[in-house]
Length: 288
Image (cartoon, rainbow, N blue to C red; front, side):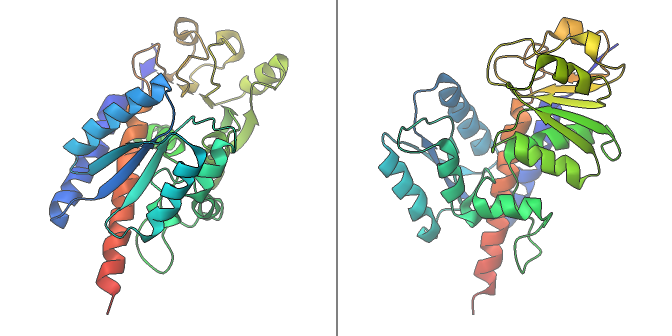
């Protein structure tokens, strides 16, 4: 019988750990959230994040942003706002003047809750686990981190395993591939442009499958999966039929199965906020 990854329990554990550390610090992190679209998924995510962050002791301020220039200016200003621990942008934005990846890249590295700034991605690719010249843990992209933490918390072995990722995006597929590489897995990356028969070929030997194609489409079924495979669907829409996959999978997370990885992603944003908070406190204590 297929095992459902216990995503809500995993998220609760990390939120609890964050709250304990913030309580010990004696003050709360203050973050800025930026909502720059009318995307329903982003609106919903913002409400959930504010609620969960408040419970964990993180103070947040949500700003609605209506233009490319306004968002760019607010992100650049973060660097000099000493009272602000970090910033978080809800994607997609889809401003015509620039791609979402541009905004991801310009968030100041030590205010980057999502872990998607150029410096933090570079740090991930070099497997540098701490911020420079400190013992403070560095941030990495939230959803990719959520996938890894879910697997490790459920004792799914990664080292030496074959992994297929159905996503190549800057925000998820690319950093997740590097995380698996860093942990000793062999990774194949595909996306919506990969030929269907090629995807099926790669899947046949996969021990772990992660899919995050932003459209409702059955990309594969149980016929091309091996027995006991661990499958995580990060897409909001759904990339496979849970009933079919459960015939062969050992572990599954999907929205359809009711144990979506979203809560773990939100808890990883809280963990990243804590890491930025710890680094902020380290810098304050180091001042003469």
